[in-house]
Length: 330
Image (cartoon, rainbow, N blue to C red; front, top):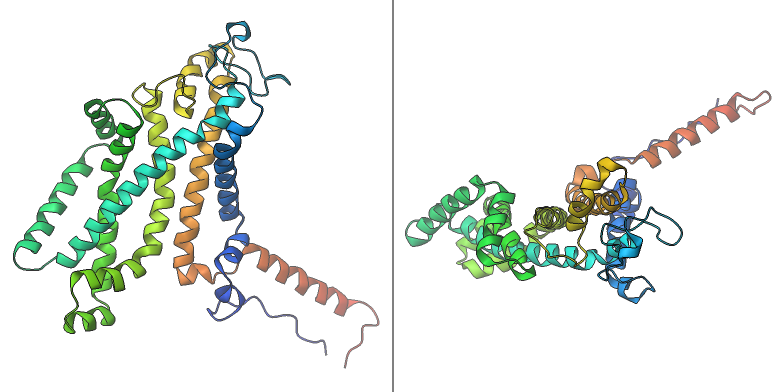
């Protein structure tokens, strides 16, 4: 009688993957790992680009007008004779800075307000009234298209990096407000929160001790995806001329500068910055998805494809060995 084959990987929360750290969880999922590698590469580009022996990203050279990609110009040049490769590598310094600061602004303001509104929801008196009015104001803000509202705010505040950061932050505040309010309302139903309330815990203690620690992972997942959305919004504003001013290297402005030449065959001024923008957005989306999946115990303990492939290969190998002529049988 042949020995039984190996058992399939367990889905119980106790086995190896449930006890593994976050890095192991990410490494076992290629899409998540690709997101971290892409974002890491983009951040490295932003840091080391000024230190590399590259051509100037802002000095035009009319003698190399729309040069196709070559060894001298790996990504070609644009209509002003600017080196696209140098500009693509320098662009994350502006795009990531705007996206990061605007998202942190939205997360801090919206997250704090959302947590307070969640605590005050349903209370009598002034706090309950503030919670109702704030949610109605949030509904009004979210009734407008995000891009259109950001464009209006930039027009009011004036064109420039600080104005773009403030505009993108303001239009994204309702997203984090609603997220944290929902999380806080859920936490309020937990026995430990009810016990703290009965013991006389104030709002500050409830926020610091219960709401923030239990909602932080969900907030971080939204922040990671929000940075990618802010990069896209920044590029969109620059594409229509309301964002970062030329000749500062920025992906949206580069796409806008070269898209008219695509129909005449000069595709490189728009395609390369477009690919960099798409990969960056995918990377941040994958990071947000990885954090969200890690927060879900069912997803965290789900068997990965690699583990199932290893199990199937081992099982087939054992069956082949047992089926050979002369195989020992007890």
